[in-house]
Length: 630
Image (cartoon, rainbow, N blue to C red; front, side, top):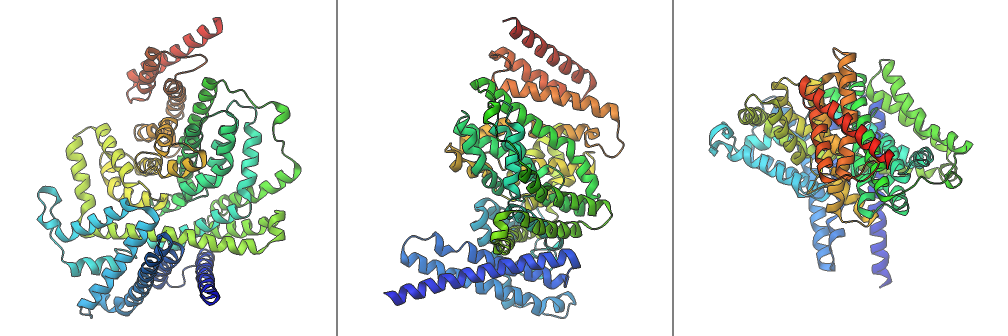
């Protein structure tokens, strides 16, 4: 009995050590690549995908999901087969890739089976990490490649057999190991490491304390603090769900303690954490991917994204204030508010300085990868200001291993996206989809944008920000641009809806992450989060019609101030109408009028905008005067 226990214990320890070592290795390679360049692009792309898949097998074993002993044994056997399969498929790529590219190799049945095995591993690991939706998209894409020639109308293509499909998806750089993997390896991974390092060194805790101190005098208190903290920490986190859990474990209980309901508490955190993904300067690392895809400088993207992101958080602040008014919640008494000490200001440098380093390196004209490298170095060094880190410096090494695992999870998702991109390149699906959308929309930009928004919400469900943005922009982007929307506004449109899919039913991954902490129903949390974030669904449309909001290009100050004024009024009209209260209760007719005037103020066309804006302002003045008289 003791021998069996000892053997099992050592096996668990050995697997944990292997998992820890691989995670640390991925972080160190990301660190080296950002600072000194790719070791060898072909090998680094392929090995990173293969090793990341191996790490995910160790981190999310099938055996761990099994109940009975026999099921665990079967799960372990499957994991071993998957581990060996991905190792073989990666090595096989090296064995035949160069000969295939040179046209000197005869593709045989064994090569096809190995490639199919590699694709099966990627599909299975995607299922474990992100659920079935993304896997279904991948399987549909492969099926379309193989059988799409039999489809009618615009969906039909020239036809591709299994050999050509497998060759493209596994043995070329148009599939699993394509350009997105290269960008993640050379650029995005260092920012994943950077975000986890900031979390591991305690920077997140300092941000929370500052957020609570800054918002203590507001009605919303902890709810407003959640908005501030999630905006700041969410920008460096590449995962909405990770941001929800990281800040929500502290903010959600305190929001409930102030008198807000469990559903509302979870919804505030879910909506606020989602917005961090489009908040400059890091934007969940997607800003760097956007710069690579569009060729637009990173700093230009940050400038363009800043005002829309701030307006999103202004709308969340407004929604929280209105809800606090409805519930009769008062500000925290001054004597009970948490005060910041000298130590807190000192520790805040562990977040502020690394962010400043990123901006400084980029302004100096150096690469984004180098900015991530020096920001991570700075974050690690400043981490020693935290007494907990000084007492246990090994915590930083463990943090790097954790960062490597986070990067590995992202790499599996990007490899999965590579399958769909490979199919799109092979079949011309992206062009066909654009043509289909345009045929439905006709000459109506609004109808086309609505169809695009719905497509973005579906495609983004359950995915991390970077892969969600990638697949959506490659499928949807060309159609939006064909309608005359500028390149940058197109990509921001796609990004917003891809990110907001994390709070949109039925998948709503952010709401499902917040609900266990708040004790609320996940679906109800999702619905309330959508209500709180409603302006986030409006902003992309405003951007498409009013590029002046981005502060870049042919900037027009008057146009900017006009659209900004309309948005601010619309934010308050929407927030109060949806909550049913302003400075006093609102009846159904007034709520409907507020929604109508808010929408009218945002509809493109000067007469409609003016009427909506003036009537909306008038309605607010009448309400406020009426409440004051009472």
